[in-house]
Image (tube, rainbow, N blue to C red; front, side):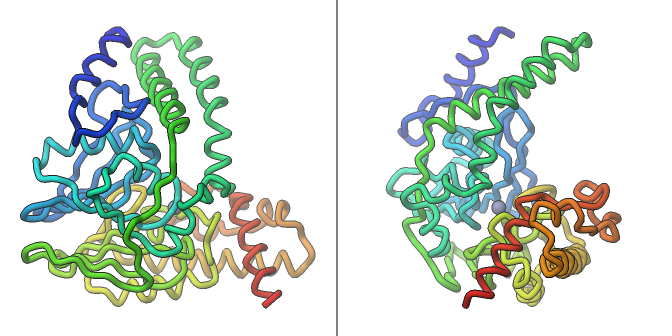
Length: 349
Ligand SMILES: [Zn+2]
């Protein structure tokens, strides 16, 4: 189908979302999200690849309203989420919860009107207000990499002889171009309701706890815990693989996960990857975090630069538990730099 026809169909489908102005970059073909039903009224929203969304969101449908936990990488992604949500409920979204400030979890905030409460940790507000989140290496690396990603996809589309593979690459290219367009309209929008340690929402029979359990993936991660449904929504404090460490307190993270283990739940809805029930994953991740901290600290003590420590840190003994993340020695440079920074900051106190 021609590009303009797709854009027209998408535009018509999106017309009238909550009376708000439609952001740029919402064009895509096919559904952008899969809503995986986890419990009655609880869904894990995972991107299909038709649109760039990066992180997962979770949806809680209550008697009279809807809560969205995390709102993806761009205003466009959040807008399309709201549109596709109509397939599972016609109730209004009145509350958004940001598990943390990272771009792939909170950069959809701006599409929600002033009547929507956006809840997050005080630190999350601090990072999103005044564009601070845009200055962090994690986001800068991401945004700076978009033009090269698009150029690379264009070359691959042109060179691909197989029609089906060419069409799949074309979809990826369209998603990347739409994402870049939406990033240009980005105005990081902070939570308008903040907490330090705990907040509970009551919606009919449902209890929704928002808990800060300690520093971990960032200084302000919250988990959303539904005690009756035994579900916990963990953002990036606990994902299905290894979580990014760019803003982490790797030394404190295992202890925070110990606090998480004290909650009574049977299902984890992570910020990346599929929902899971195997609690052993928490132990595996704690073991990895303890070892990466010890290994990088040891290299630092030997006078190795952060750059070399990133190449040399050997965590391969964890590769059976994290096959998608660990293929050989080495860790992401951003992780080594961050661990060095945390050690140096602690040393100055
Ligand atoms: Zn994150």
